[in-house]
Image 1 (spheres, chains in turn orange, brown):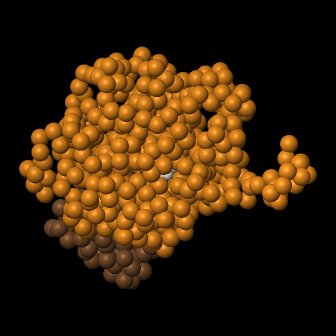
Image 2 (cartoon, each protein chain N blue to C red):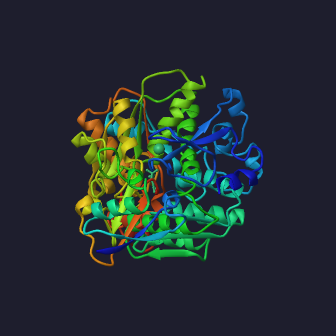
Image 3 (tube, chains in turn orange, purple):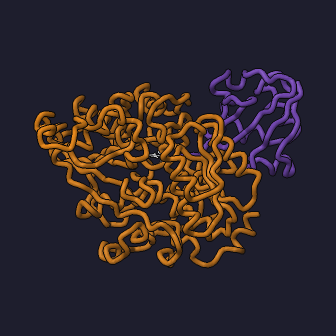
Length: 419
Length: 91
Ligand SMILES: Cc1ncc(COP(=O)(O)O)c(C=O)c1O
Ligand SMILES: [Zn+2]
């Protein structure tokens, strides 16, 4: 089967990527729709023949993730293909939030500005390219919500049929914001881990399906590197001292670290120590728990939290999150649902950024770490907001609202005591 | 106990392409031993050198992840379906 894959591929289909290699045992495999090592079940990673590349070349590229094409498993002509063109979202100087938390130099990487309002558009764009180059007939995913939105939209734009699987009890905006793009949205009775298992089984049976976070997951994961590249570029080509990142499967966090390592290796930034912190919701905190317990494996949990986008009880990259965080001197911590809501409100009131629950988790953890001293409040810090508050309105709908409902008269206004 | 085992793509080289095979055993550990007698080499793909489940393998007895049950000691009732699934998916 694999030789057939190679025969069908056009030259340069995966850019500078050369092989898949097992993160556990190092066994290599040719590029194709494969995700688990045949020797040990370990995750396959893309390896590259890295080009030499300059800051100027990158800066001359498009204002989206394709400016980093040479560092992604995508062809040189990727920018001409129909895709959602995600990335290059704003990095905002968060002076108000910083003052509130006592952090001197704080930035928010606001990835709610992507086409379907979460960082998932990045990973999906890279997975879409793989699906296209592999000649896949169906573009699919199991999702906690945001990924479903991104896959359904990208498939519509690329003209590839999509099949999208979600847990049956997702927030309504996330359901509608998938169904609007596809008539094959499937709600599964069960939690995300059940949906994920089903998708893995389907991926094993159906030929020609590209499940973005299953059989083309090695490509998908690479899309998250662009968050790391962008942060460094937007800071004027340096790596921040501290980066705080939400963790569900853990893919994003480990890929931001990979991005920082690549930038150093390619000479695009100066080598320096940096720390990476992971954020989870207490109701689904298997990685934070393993971190506290000093374990290097993660014991799965059954999630129970309002942060549904992060509700993965059996995180595929959990062990690697622990590796990255421990290697860089960071922490994985968690906050409860009340702190998640407070985090959403705090970011909105201080910076005018409305985060979804995942962002509330990350801001909540930032606050906790700043207060406990685990985070160095004098060091340059970047915190990620990876999704949009309009998708999880219910989380805060009973906390905020009109200060008064009045008649349309000046007297009524003054009587209401608003100012 | 006669059980059926769903085999992931990467192990089908051992089962001559079969995606579902029969096996015997009163516990998951026994079922895996039995699979080894039928499809030599398959056990060391699923278990590590110490004989524990590899960290990137999920095994389900019926609908339940065996890490929520008794791991390799999980009982396997007659007719139950066991699924072996790579764990590195999701996000
Ligand atoms: C908004 C948001 N942030 C963060 C994540 C976590 O991503 P990962 O699975 O790569 O850890 C998700 C995952 O679904 C998400 O939807
Ligand atoms: Zn391996």
